[in-house]
Image (cartoon, rainbow, N blue to C red; front, side, top):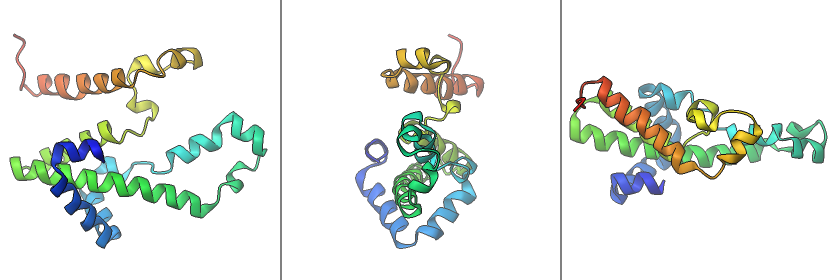
Length: 168
């Protein structure tokens, strides 16, 4: 939330957090109706990665999924939603106030979530981060490079393709 708050301002972010907290289901439905990216986001990704971990399987045996309680999964998922949805809403409303374009506001808000609340799924990673275990180990501490890759693809290349940046 800190990165999005820095870009949208604390008062706007607090307003979105309060709005989300007063009626989370309504807020989630509103955001999901505007953003397919948020609607299709996997909020349980960290748990599934944990469950698939060889270390966890070795420690708990084959019934790892049964060892992680459903209430714990719901708590972790709720914290993730509590950060992502208000962040998306704050960036969406800031852009909407500035541009008046819902389509552009959705694009900017989705982009902010990709940068500030990355799911770290393979699709979110630049080519440098994909590969076998050794290749990923070499790049494990290069998250700034990951952000730079996303900026290059989304900001620079996207703006160039849209004609907002010239070749000169």
